Image (cartoon, rainbow, N blue to C red; front, side, top):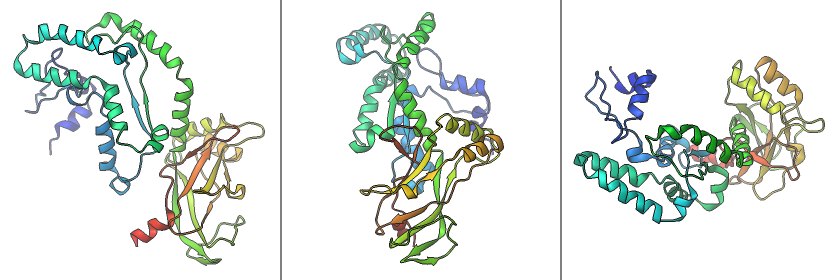
Length: 335
């Protein structure tokens, strides 16, 4: 069956033409093979954070009730002076109204919609207001460089070089924030896969336990594996290994820590990402770590598996994908 969306997706020139159809600068785009018209997304979603959040729930409906590992919004520049005063936007609107009245009515409506949505920072703030405060800083992040000389018009091509210079200057002040985002992306490369067995009151059910020592004083222990999203044999897994190697010090290696909410982590439950493991990732593109055994005090306990990447005091732990989780309670719901 013919699918115009797939045709456009597979042809970069068509993609560029469709996504740049911003009125009144460029006409709407109608491919020869279709009666559909395409318009720049700015008209309705110049900051598509709500679209992205809805899309991830559609793609992963089994976890649509959970927070994302990371929702990163990257802006194309803002001017703090314009955001802090209403005078500049009002004056700009009066100037635009003089020539906007000469456009066809349909284009006037489209441009008005685009102008209303161009304040991407307000769109972001409205979205953040719907998110519980304790999760905003860690999982919902926006990077938008401050342009001291204002945001140029869409057709002001003479400003491109200055815009690049100003953007680099602004981003240079965000190094720590960008590094924190990169670390969280590394953490999200890992996830936990449950094994079929578990231990209750010291009795073994299901699969065999790993060979490393465990503590049978707890009522419930969960078994499973820490996996990596990047496939064995892939170049990306090698590059992830190189990234982990950059965190190594003579007396420090990255590690996974396992902790139940409101309890202190037990160092015996740490899973080290040893130099040998990292070497296997870089040299052979294979990832495998010791199997963790997770102690759970009660069925509804919330557990976190996190990775510590940097040698810091106190250590900064970043949850791997999907955590925190109620591991035992999940099974009861499915059952």
